[in-house]
Each structure stands twice: as C-alpha cells, then as structure tokens.
Length: 184
Length: 72
Image (cartoon, rainbow over all chains, first blue to last red):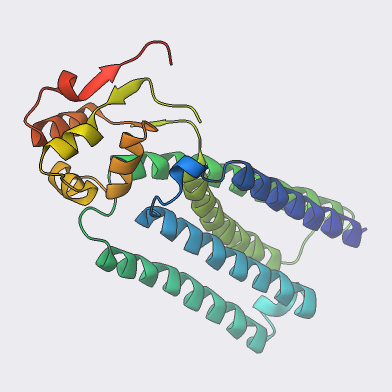
C-alpha cells in the first residue's frame, strides 16, 4: 500500500514539474525581446532552480537507496545530504555576490522587487502542495499503526525547506517570463 | 505580445540627448538596464517615482515623456 502512495506522490511531482516546464516554454521570450540581457535577479532565480532541483533529486535518491532512517542511523548518507545542502545553498548565496560584482549600476530595482514580491505566491503553492502530499501519504501508510517514525518529521521539514526555495526561484523565473506588463 | 497602455518616448529622448546609452540612463534614473529595455518596448509601466526620475534626467515634464492610451 505504501508503494502505491509513494508512486502516486512521485507521479504527482513529475506532473507538477511538467506543467511548470510547459508554462515556461509557452511564455519563453518572444523574438522582440531577444537580445535583452538577463536581469541579475532572474539569473539568481535560474541558479536557485538548478540548485534546489539537484538537492531535491539527491535527497530522493538517498531515501530510495538507504531508506528514511538515513537521517538518524546512516552517518555516510547523512554526511552526503549535509554536503549537498551546504555546497548547494552556499554556491547559490555566493553566486549573488558574483552577479552583484559583475553588474554595473543598480542590481535590483522596483520591477525586480515587484517580481520578487509576487514570487511568494508560487512558493506558497509549492509548500502547500508538499504538505498536502505528505499528509495524504503518511496518513495512508500509517493509518493502521496509529504512529509514524520520527524521522518523517525531519523529512517533512527538509522537503518543505527545499521546496520553498524551489518555489521562490520558480516564481522569480516565471515573473520574468510573463507576457503581461508588471505594474509596480 | 500585449503592450502597456502607457506609451513613452524614452528611446527618442535618449538619442536627442547625445545618444545616451540605456546603461547611462539607468544609472541616472536609479534602475537597471533591463528595466529601461522593457520600458522602451512598452512592456512595463513604471512607478510614478521612476517616471519622474526619468523625466528629470531629460529635463522634461512627465507628460513629455509618458502618454496614456485608453484603447490598448
């Protein structure tokens, strides 16, 4: 039964990522916008998307190979997870300083701030989707036992943290791909 | 691609001001070059504050730079 729900959750995740990819493709920059250099914040958004996807996939592989107990029992797997987190989010943070140094003049202005503010709605949807998925999967898996392993709490936290960062990056990238004019 | 209902003459005014570059205008108005680019393509409506700063760079009134179109 657990396998069925985990499979459904993975399929759901693939469908969500597919829908996101479809949106970005449909709203890709048109010919009249070609040659426009990428805004510093948009570059940060793309880097964030890559970093969070790599960490998320890495976490999924660890869970698939070692199981959900790796957080408490397997030191090597836990080390790999922390290495992914520190290197990934560290590289993301460091990239902002590199982008700032390379850009002449203002780095973030009112248009960027408006896009950044609107990206919160995408982050909220992703976090909500993750929490709903966890709730359904764990309820179905452990309904009969009435209790669940404590390691799931940590997994819920880390997936929500990574998913939130993914959602924020996605919101930023989608903001720059909108055809509609952004009012400040 | 839809355009903003506020047109502007920023590109013309830049060329009338010694062919000022987009980056120079961005530095003087306090925004990024990307914002100047989308403004010239009329894909973005600036805040009043930015509109005034751009008008001031060209030593013009805000109506000389920006024009409202109801029919877009």
